[in-house]
Length: 190
Ligand code: GLN
Image 1 (cartoon, rainbow, N blue to C red):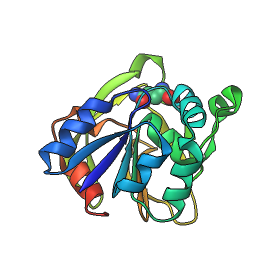
Image 2 (image 1 turned 180 degrees about the horizontal axis):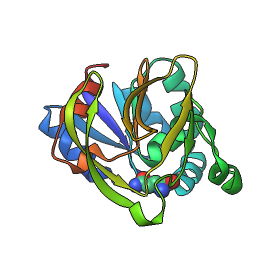
Image 3 (image 1 turned 180 degrees about the vertical axis):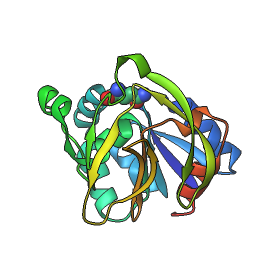
């Protein structure tokens, strides 16, 4: 199947390789019309403020929101997780970045502090498997969920993976780990 990867900024090519390795066709998404030809969408990591702005200027913002609300599977990693959230913490309020607001969760950007800006942890992820190598890079964390959103993994008290029906979000970067289990789990939704 054709799997879209939002290609306006950030870690796009690593997702592309994983999608291809799983036997699907990766498609870079840079304009709204392209969203009609895909079965699932990945929103990569990068800088959520920049990605949000670019999504708006390309017209992707409204259309991704519409597709996600209409049931298209969307997977957000890191900055992509921030964008999927309905509510942002202090940093999101400060930068006044627009969130897609599709998942019932509150995120905090750069939640792991300066001394731990980048690190790796082996975590168990419900439904996906155990000891997944999770790479965190200035990662967000989910501070709380409500409604239909379900936490799938935790690092200490922080929720670092969550799911809501067709929507999946991780604080970390599974595309950098060589472990394809999360991508496989996500693509099974399509
Ligand atoms: N810190 C970035 C943000 O809040 C996310 C970092 C990432 O995607 N690796 O947008």
